[in-house]
Length: 159
Image (cartoon, rainbow, N blue to C red; front, top):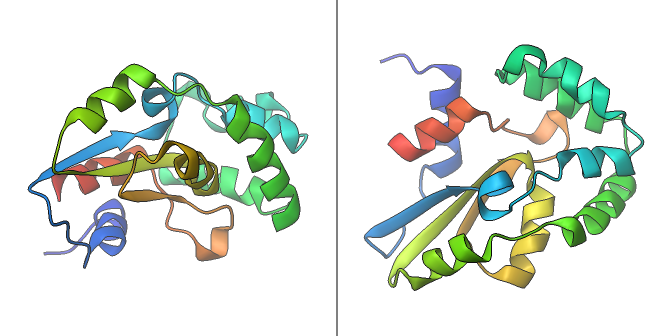
């Protein structure tokens, strides 16, 4: 069977990953684990006008091409500037304590966090919150990233 792009990406991300627990919880990060979406704050720190993002995702288009365009935007910045923006933004995240507490109540489970945003932000948040066993997301450079789109998230859940 020929794999579509999003199926291939999902398999590439999770092939070879095994959990000792039978219960696996898969959760989105922005606007699920967090109450807010920090993308615009992140872009603001990089002096990227929020209207540029609105134009990229115009008409609620969330294909791989739109996410690729955002990654190309981020690729214009040095790693140092990205890390500075991450450090600023991680403090602005409003964690949904109700959801996190519910997840932590499920004993003997493994938790996978998925983000279409910047993986580094959620890695930093998780250092403090300790929610996830595995975090999957997009790095900030086009050349070394699998781009996490809604379709890739769906395939990960299916697998």
